[in-house]
Image 1 (cartoon, each protein chain N blue to C red):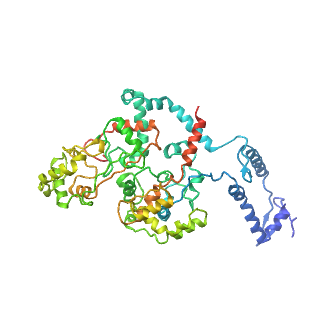
Image 2 (image 1 turned 90 degrees about the vertical axis):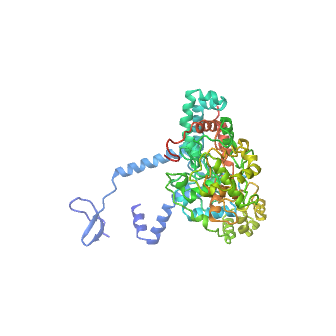
Length: 247
Length: 299
């Protein structure tokens, strides 16, 4: 053993390869098998994709670093489930590239914030969090309301998501800019197209309260309002488990 | 390489390396390190058997203990539910008057209610329920849809202008934007309203203009929802315009915005998020909210 060590220590390339080999053991055993194990990501039939407007909102969420203070991961702990709702399933973030589970909560978890508050509240809160939550230390994001959303490149964003496995079809990619605007313009022809392509359950509203102009605020609120709503799988799973636990 | 050179002081061999005359002793690793290393390996063998550990292609070894975080949390939730069963059933089935007469249940209302209100309602209505512009002050105990506990419970269940199928639906029309009233007409309706409301804040020189004309327009355009006497209509969620409480603001500028663009507040529905017992606890909790003494808002 000592002889082998002496030999390998004196061969630079060999020693580097040995270090790489040893330090990858953890990953090989803990991460690699997840790609072959069947139940790593639950199969859910009702999973929907982010619309272009929601995807744009998600990009703003990443750009502004929201993930640094807000997690999107309800852990399997009683207090978290009682406060936020059913624990997160892997399936729920299967179209998140990258995932935004986060690792620290300065603000609350947002995995199931969709539908919990009104659009008007989200806008008021993002403009100045202190207006609605006096003790909040969240920064203001009032400028989102004044900044028109850049929609031209959204087709490219959808295509990139498709390349990593999100099932967008060609029509969705080709019409992404129009769909992003249509979702924030209820009653328009473009809005009907959004519902046709992404399903009737899609939220089609003037998210930021300003008609006729699609802002970054529209996109971010649209994204926040869909969090936890892409599939009902977590709620179904909780009901099944509760039925098993019932006396 | 001379590996056998011995250090005269300690009697140990040196490594054979030499740096400017300094030589390193070839001290062996202490035995205790090997003992603990061995124990660690032994523990891992045991742990592999007890816990989910080894990948097997499409599956993995489940371990003898059958550890499962999802089951653990379901069990903990089930246990909590059984613990609370003593009062959840009564909270769900008893009429409100009986719950209010039971000190033990009302203690649950004040304790759990505060927690539930903080987690779910305080974001809009404020920690003490005092609301803000666009978000009703619940402590004022002035209810758009009626103040009976059953009515509030229903509002919590379906929301207002929400995505629930049975949602309460209320809308203030956009009289200006949709061309039903001209700007001077809107100004006179506002003068009429401010002349008859209990509290309008700062007086405005324009308040004296068009009060009578405004009254005529009010009777024609507004009374169907807000009532002939402007005291509101609870079945339509139309507010009382005389009580001095203004959801969006009673100044002329805000009232003009309200009349020109209309209003349609949104209260989310809680049927999916909260259980019946939790919604009934919140109903009694909000009915018990008291307005601030002295001033409004966050005293």
